[in-house]
Amino acid sequence: MRALYAYYCTPIIRACQEVFLWYSIISQDSEPKMNEIDPKGNNGQIAQGGAPSTLPAESKTQNHESISNGGRTDQTSQRPSPPIKPWKIKETAVRWWNFIKSPDFTNPAIAIATIAIAIATVFTWVEVHSGGKQTDKIVTASQSIKTALETSNTQSQEALNKSFDHADDALKKTLKQGQDAMDGSNKQSKIALDAAIQQSQLDQRAWIVWRGIGPVPQLDQPWEPQVHFTNTGRTPAKNVLLSCNLVPLDKEARFPKEVAPDSPTILAPNDDQFCILKPMTIPKVNQTFLDEVSTAIFRVYIYGSADYFDVFGKEHWLTFCRVMQPDGKTWSSCKTGNDTGDGKKPEKPIN
Image (cartoon, one colour):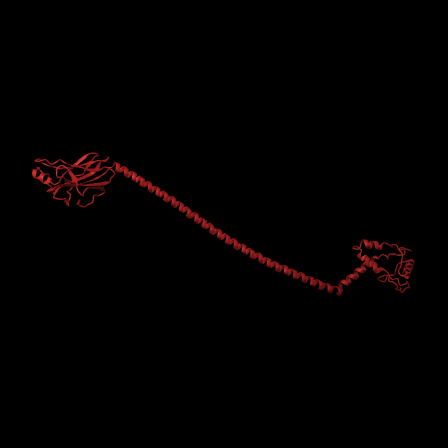
């Protein structure tokens, strides 16, 4: 009689080795041990765990024949192991659990786990140490970057300050140059204006010049010489003070001090003014006087000055000196004493 689950165990194990691993172990444990005698006379066929074999007598006979034939069986005589009983799975699990709890398993497992933990700890320490070094490198790099940035900022600030200083200096220099140029231009303009004003004043001012002496001395006639002045300018001369002096000398020498001038007057443009000679005039000219003049026994000198202001408020002065020639008619200039200028007249003798 064939078993109910014959030929079904092996295909399931081959197809589902991963799933039915415990099933295969139990199936192998459930096969009867060869040549084991059952104490009850069942020909030694006792199942794993003390359970009697459930195979029928026919199956036992076939198995015995297979063994007696030297283990040679044909395809038709092979039969699969009987199926595992469900209650054997629990027993196998209990046995494995007891094995796992036993020191034979726990001690090696703990040792292996300890080694693994130690290795993991070493790896962790190495990683932490490497991470610390990397952190130190990052911190050092950050400090280097910070220092570089601070240096760059300092250099940039210094460069910016220098640029501002240079720009400020350039601006001040430009402003100074502009101011100097403006001052120079103003100065030149002022000089030009002053020159134009001066030239205009020179052109418009009063100019008093010596014009001549007269009249000519006549025999047996009184002689009252007069010195004539004229204003050749375009504006009047104000506060005109004239001083005229006559002195006979044998040669040109130091003249006496001028006498005080007359009262101030005004001399209009192109107008003529004269002053009376001092000291007193000659009441009558005789032949002796004419002979002495012609033979140069003595010479007649007339000298003096004119002080005046123009309409622009500037003071001017004029000095003159003339000597009579032997003909008694003409006058020539002295070696000194003929000059003109602006401002106060110098207080010094003519000679």
